Image 1 (cartoon, helix red, strand yellow):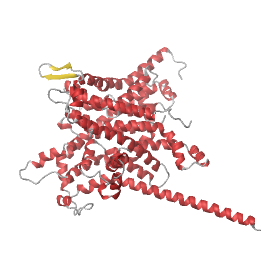
Image 2: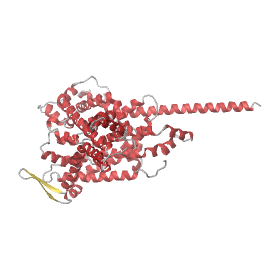
Image 3: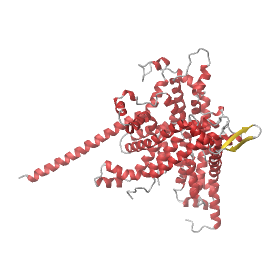
Image 4: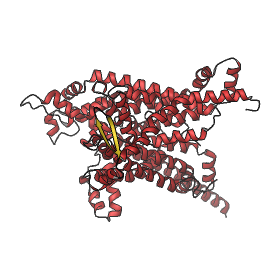
Length: 291
Length: 313
């Protein structure tokens, strides 16, 4: 395609390319990368604001970090709550999305209707709306006290009972956060060609075997993508306790901006580690079984 | 004797029973699938149904334990109060205008960026794509404070410019997703299209909006729809940056209780207290424009994701 290009054309191509890409690149440096790096600096600084001299800052080392983790009465609690929410919900959301996608992947009447129902929370979900739902009992579909099974689960060892109870208590949120992931899995499932499925069923594969031997390996990259998407979605959600702390403590007297920046960085480092671990667990190329 | 016939009959019967079993099995499976789908569908819709029912409950209905799903009468007072507290007409207009502008700017900047990356062999292209992904992974709570300081420095805190500028430069809500979608779409059609237009004398910007954009309308639709919804629902950053006059409906919902007390609660000895029903009426009012949008454009939303190519590769 570019066999006869002269040097002049090549230069023009580069210039045009950068002209198109420039707004984004400028924006990235100004509104994302610079604030990102600047917040590191702030988190190590004692910032003072005076009407005459403007903003001044001096280096304080890890002071804010240490205070956040040892002295602050609410931060560690919020951090723990939010991380528990992310760590417990993410696998459940991804698994739920996969199961819903499998349910939707068949051919039957009303398929598009159910697909539309499973997707609609994506449209309306926002911090304040979720806060109102949790505030009322609107998200408590299953009132667990009414069911014998609840007592039964409670009597099980905690390793088993804790996640089950968690599902009961958060079923609406788990489902409401899974809309985009369902559609991505569904699109992935549709790409598994009919020939492959037919070949497998002629060879006598059961639905169970097909799921483990064909669908799952095929969907593996999507599982990784959806896991990362879910973690990013949940961690940035406005009603998270940690996100609230960061905003609320932004203007604390004597520690404006610096302290809050440290809070956001503690959170960010843990999230990055979480993303790293999920990537290592689900990374492509590991355990390749079909080619 | 008749062995052959018997065997044939047996075989026939067995075949029949296998077919019958298979039919029964698939029918049963279908039944189970419908059962699951309906059950899960109810769980999905439950909060909305609950909101609708409760938003029509008067105070006596609300505290009456025998009334759960059917209010004793259609009580509209909750909506009247919620409309007043949210300042609905004005807030709706502010929200729609701001969100539409953000959406438009974000779609343009992301389309340009995607086109620049996809159709030009520029140096460091791989690095720029890594940057695009990084921009998605850097969470807004880390950049929140410096952004606030920066806009504060320029006196832009409180002004809509503080949310429009990032959108115009491709740094709005989930911008990276749209850059990648555009990149995917723009990479997908033959280079000869552009070259033909160029030979006819079209400049490169003309090629972009006369040739490339029309081919990639689905990407434009995805970007417009999802930008609109995600900007509408974003309250974390914009709640901090926008002034009192420019607060969107979800932000109004966030401070609903305070504003309710300001509008109704101050009267001495009045029994006007905010209750669950009024709050749920307000919540429904805030999400209803989006629900209407979804009812009309449901297909475009879902097929947009399916065709976006994010699932590919």
